[in-house]
Length: 298
Image 1: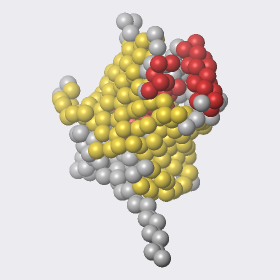
Image 2: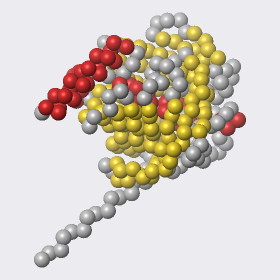
Image 3: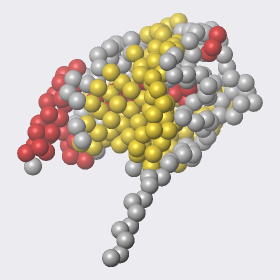
Image 4: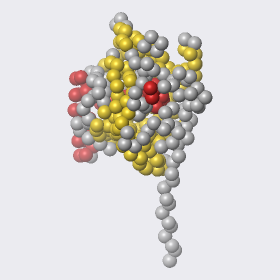
């Protein structure tokens, strides 16, 4: 009981600190990181960002759903979902609508209520973003951001709440944080241990290059079984949601799907973990644990 009381007090203190900054959220940061941090291992320059051949099949499909538990100091504090929701026509382009959502759960929700959602329109043939819609609901704080990409003219319109949209220059084939995760999953073969790679991005009114180091391959343990993964570490450069402070590591399945299964984000007090709890619409090669031999009868 004493440990639980200390954990609740620490979460209350963390919630007060985050609310005072208003544009940050511990849960939002983790699940935005799931989308954003996983985009980093794409390419070293504009040439390597060439669109994959149209005949190469996408490693994800309509209906794919990934559900994560978010924990902090052994406390399960929230839930996040990545969902390839549906295929549709967007201004004449064949796109997939992809959603990410996060929410606080259990008694943590009583201390700090979080309900954040983002969706992107991912071009199936050209494999870049057409639009991102971000809705943030955390405690009393509300924010609605929309980024509309004009990939032909290399421009983006950025709109916040009811304010007039502003136009920004973008790099060719720029991604938003969520679409880039799914673009990453089409780039099997680019993840080479010991290499550092970059990707042009537009997010939070900024055009910038994101950098990640491909660290190692590792077999990790999940509830469902063991999984062979590739571990990457992003070096975040932008302010706001993607803080310069702290460190982050991401585990992707070491197969043609490059499915995110775990993320660790080190903060001032401890670390957050997002761990895959359930998946559907994608194949994950779980290696079963060895069963302990039954004791022989005397």
